[in-house]
Image (tube, helix red, strand yellow):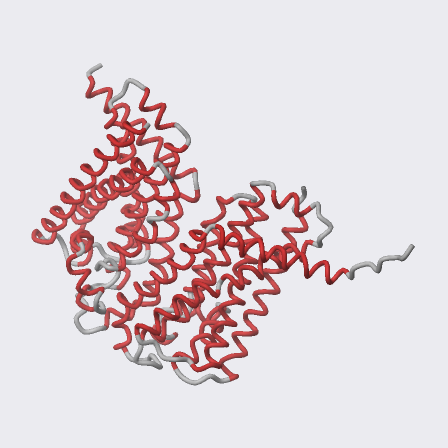
Amino acid sequence: MTSLATSARVVRALGARSIRQTFRRPQLISPIIVFPTLLLAIQTGGAGAGIELPGFPPVQSFLQFMLAGSMMQSMMLAGNSGGIAFAVDIEMGFTDRLFAAPIPRFAIVLGRLAGTAALGLFASLWFFAIGLIFGAHIEGGVPGALLAMALVTTSAMGVGGIGAAIALRTGSASVVQGLFPLVLVVLFLSSAFFPQALMIEPAKTIAEYNPLSFIVEGVREPIIAGIDATQTLEAVAAIAGLLVFSIVLSARALRHRLRVG
Amino acid sequence: MEATAPIPAWRNNLATIAALMVRAKNELVRVPGAAIPGVLAPTIFFLGLNGVFGGLIHLGGFDTSSYESFIVPVSMLQGAGFTGAAAGVNLARDYEQGWVDRLLVSPAPRWVLLSGNVLAASLRALIPATFVLAIAFVLGAQWPGVDGLVICYLMVMAMAAVAACWGSMLALRYKSQSAAPLMQAGMMALVLLTPAYAPLALLQPWLEKVARINPVTQVIEAARQGFIGSVTWADTWPGLLALAGLLVVLGALALREMRRTNV
């Protein structure tokens, strides 16, 4: 068997393990599905009248507008949960056993990221299903939905890389868990839940430059209007930057973990 | 030989409750990080909701021109909900580590053991509430008056007790910290399925219906009144009644779980 095939098997096995691990532990799956779904319902019901504000982009409903934000929230929390689970593996010595195995080290991290990406895909499917059940239209049709799912999945890999890097660097699940509030801060300071133009300062200005805003707009556009090349390219550029950043961070953290043991 | 008068049972019970509350306080002193998530979460929600949904105030229908004033009691109650749920998580951890078993073989009545946990959460809820309130004042929230502030804090403390009963009930039922998401999600739903973001008239019809039957709506209206207008008895008593009802129901359920818990 070639080394590439071996690596692919390792990535697949570890990715599948990480998905099973998430679905078996309520603490890991709840932030990805339960909380974003609950917030989607509450914010749609509570702030839905906001679509009548002058300057709100034309949308069929606030639920349609919010779907992208919920996918982003779920995707980011999937990255955080993946980091927590990775840190637990380090604390319990499972990662040490993997390091001692005759497999490429990068495949260990990639396996975790593959699992997080799959959870991102699951989250996007989940919220599309909820949107369709409750009457939201996907203006971009099937191609638009596929594009949004692809953007969410690759973003999950990028965010998961940051979670994995922090897990490798600190080896502590509680430190990674402590990032949970930071995830909320990044989300609130983006256009995930409301149009950036209608936000209050200083959140409005921060959201304008927050890379997450570019990603969320790229995911939202196919849902509320149809595929737009400019917004898609901006989202792809933001995701590419996120991926490069998280790969560099993970590689450095992996080297650190191998050095300190 | 001189006979020693027996210590009345009520004094023993009070001493046990005080000791359990001191234990909970010690956790805050010895593990300062333990209070941070409970303080951070409502603060982030307050700042985030204000920054994101603050523009809703232009819709009309709000009794105030300050969204900070409108939303701050919600964040304080949300902090109380998180703090109460954390009391449940701590009880589940105590069970996993065998501490609850030791308490159960003590001669202390079950209601005393539950009261210590619940009252500690009530006091602990003052920390996030005060922190969020201070930030709200910095951002320009309206001064609710002494009466409005007292009522708001009373609602916060009682809400934390309700959440602690809910958390304790689940902790004793599932006997695992894995139930933590259920404790938190339950409280989050209870506090936010109300006119939390906007007045009842501006809510979507389904949420308006849910909010009208959710008792916490009365609690939010009572806690909010001083921040958006004047304090009246008519806006206060429904909140007190709702909290009393929730405390009786959830307290009874938590006590039932505690009585069913065997060593």
